[in-house]
Length: 276
Length: 253
Ligand SMILES: Nc1ncnc2c1ncn2[C@@H]1O[C@H](COP(=O)(O)OP(=O)(O)OP(=O)(O)O)[C@@H](O)[C@H]1O
Ligand SMILES: [Mg+2]
Image (cartoon, rainbow over the protein chains, first blue to last red):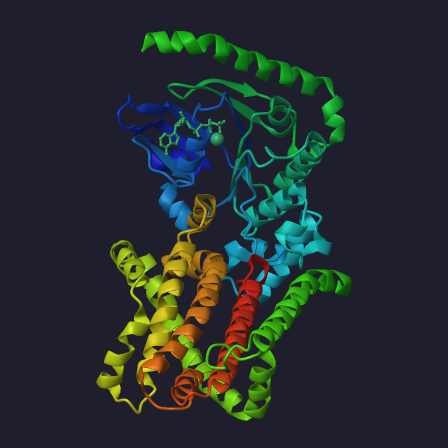
């Protein structure tokens, strides 16, 4: 619980002894997270993977200050999550694109900038850049319901990047997409993350996705939600993560190691339950 | 487009013409007295003859309804926003306003005439305003609560202030509901502004003309004014429907 501030200032996210318990009326409390320690370096890409209900979204929400820990501490760039949120230090993207249906693509992307009261000339310039970045330059004036699911998700990602955050929090952003679109989006995200130099925490259910994108993969187990393994993928710089990587032997090796770590979780889960 | 509109409009139009024809024939063949039911042709003749007065009456009643809609809707929207920001107010007021919706507001008209003076339109404005207020307030409140948790999370993660959430999320999201409230309220305002005239107040509206024609046993003329009232009601409905159309999600915000 006691980390020196110089430690945490050098990290993008620093989590110590984190525990989150949800009281459930008439039933035993749900221990969504227990004993979580995690450091994410600036510019590092970390994926969270694990069975449904192991607390991935809960961890994400705690880092984003959308929820409060029961015990433990979180530092985001050496600040409290609340301070970091008020300072617009991170961008968020969810499984659903969460676009506002009454706003055009451009104005959806502009939302974080408008909320931060960025002046309109700068907003306009930035919208142009972001539309280019996600390949939607032709669609600025469209409404979300005129776009495919993949395009909507790209808008959501552009929106999360609007303020050039040094930290991106993404909860299954590609969960609703088909396999082809998904792979294309992963390649784009690798490029964008490489270009922006932002640290990324990505929640995913897909082993290949985690292997392709991550520097490190955090494997979690449910009830209580714990970190059971951290797989160093280390397939090199984000900029080198192109389609070719999916055919490389290092990629298959990483997939195998993550799968083994995950299968360990399923084997270990009943044991963990007995210990309680 | 036109073919589809025709196909939609033709059956009710034919039915309307058919019933008018049957009505005409029935009145003529059965020698029904005009004070029981005048023939459509007689009513139409009166409608054409007194067209100027009917339009004047419709404008008078319509103006009262419009003032009621503007005042009632504006108050309802402002107070609903306030109520949604201060949770207790919303929880306390919603059941009271809902209960008020079953009170026949128009029954208050005679009382209002004595309060504000029988030569003033104030009582009628108030009746119209209250009848708009109820559906607009309740619908706006419902719409303001409609914001999805994931959108709230998005705004919170982007450090939006309470007012920014209202301005950029809850209000635009509530707009279609507000419009539905206004549509319902507009129809009610016209009906109530018209009926309020039955209970007294200054001359000049359609309702007043209906009662005075009937009182002087000029039934075909009374029916002609009723026809005017039907047309005014349809006009109000069309305006309400147009507002609702404009406020559909894509046009909002
Ligand atoms: N607000 C809440 N109230 C009560 N219990 C909750 C709440 N939020 C989460 N939980 C519980 O905490 C546990 C972890 O939930 P969480 O959503 O973090 O899982 P997850 O790993 O994201 O799962 P998935 O992969 O299905 O998205 C679950 O058992 C869930 O039921
Ligand atoms: Mg989740």
